[in-house]
Image 1: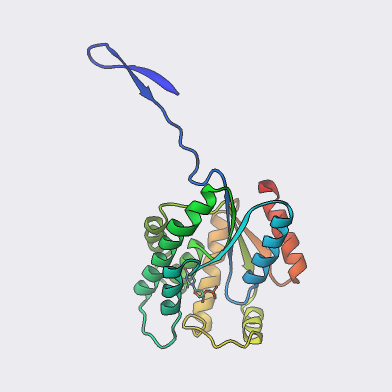
Image 2: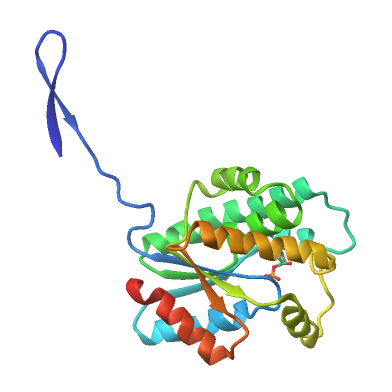
Length: 229
Ligand code: TMP
């Protein structure tokens, strides 16, 4: 669009008014969130197959990780043998995220792909902002810098009570990582922060009942994504 303005000498100056499209006009960024054991990976894989069957180009990624530098940071930040302070932890997750955005997310979205991302900024808001008590707004600010403001088109939050999540995580039989060793109070604060985020942004963040079986959870996810499909 072009518009004519007049300067003091009354000479018209033509200026172009450019309306920028959203950062990822072509693709879709769908994030999956929840506490450990809520079934994020199972849902991400099922959703990827479902979307591919509907003809979408789908990319499945996880955080922290997804690209080499971020996978190295993942090993560091989850290492139970290391002492890592709350602020260091928030910065490491944000650093891994910044690299993923630059190297994988932005190009994939520009190519028109549907990116299904297992965790994103909301994980840091819940775990570091809530669980570690750094404050949601402080962690949000840090992540705005890390991501350049990239926001998911939709977020699926898998809600599950702590006892069921713990039972599922135990059933996997894996050694708990540094975060998974935290106590009940940490996970209560993290779960509360997730629900607080969902209440503040009900259009973006849809809460799914993760206590149901995998097929029902997939069905709930498809309903939550219906307007984007
Ligand atoms: P995962 O279990 O989903 O693979 O994630 C690894 C751990 O990292 C998990 O305990 C949650 C934690 N985490 C954060 O605390 N903040 C973050 O921003 C992310 C992405 C993960």
